[in-house]
Image 1 (tube, rainbow, N blue to C red):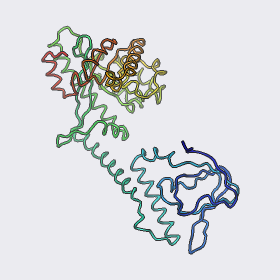
Image 2: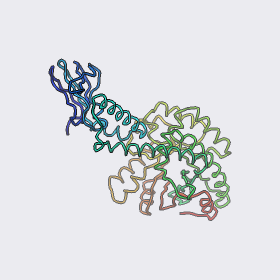
Image 3: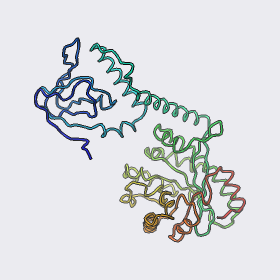
Image 4: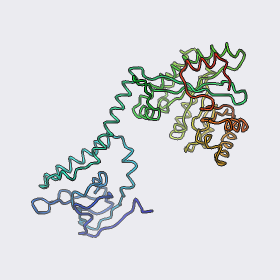
Length: 402
């Protein structure tokens, strides 16, 4: 595997790169100096002398275009070479609008430099990738505008997926899942709008909406459940909370206000938190979760085992429920390693006196295997897909068991 970062030394007078060379790397000057030279009216013109701490070759590395100048070492010079491959992921994952701004600035700088040098633009050598970057940038801007308008137009709604007690096959609770229904009755994938809402900060307002709506529906679910299953343990409402909502401890006060205003018994409220929050800032996460726990509600860690190293932090958090990610559950039928992982997670949760929810159950075999492993609850398409509140009410009123 080629090195993406390495050092090299140039003697005095050495050409580090020439105008027109293909640029696949940038160079950080560690010691020494270089002249940056362009051609003007057939003569060399030094437009900059750069020393230690400066960067050269960055434009060609970013936009993958030919070098726009000659660079010559004016004394023995050591540089750190950074290959373009080192920056491919950050460049392609950057905010599209920031990427566009960067590329436009570079393009205009090159145009100005070429005009100064007397070089005319070659229409056959246009940067075609700029069109794609521009398209992605405006697509993102339009998505953000649509998200804001959708929020203002109340296009978001809550659906609910039943969580089933694997021993009794009765309804134990429901998970609230946000859906975005467009005016034409089509849906926008949560995988598309949730990351966008996180990025823009609109997830905070959407999170408040989700909590308020789900708790209002919970009142109806509980009333119906009491009539259909007298004496049975009442179902809980499990609602996702974004890490961004918990980044400000004052927002927890807002969450508490919403819960208290709903009138729902706190023992019926469960908030789901992703592992990411706990790994990125465990100290703050511990403080935030303890503040939530003090309200009297339950806390769940969602999508456990999906690539983050939260094992060393689990003891810090007042968690009640561990949710096994669907990726492990889905492959249990075919993968012995997945079965072992699920068995280990169940054992860990049991040792920590946490109850366990398995997500993504699709077969009777999976449900039976998880029951045998002492997993408490299950959810997935085998039992029921996410559905509107009215459909959940009909299941409850019909005395549905699984």
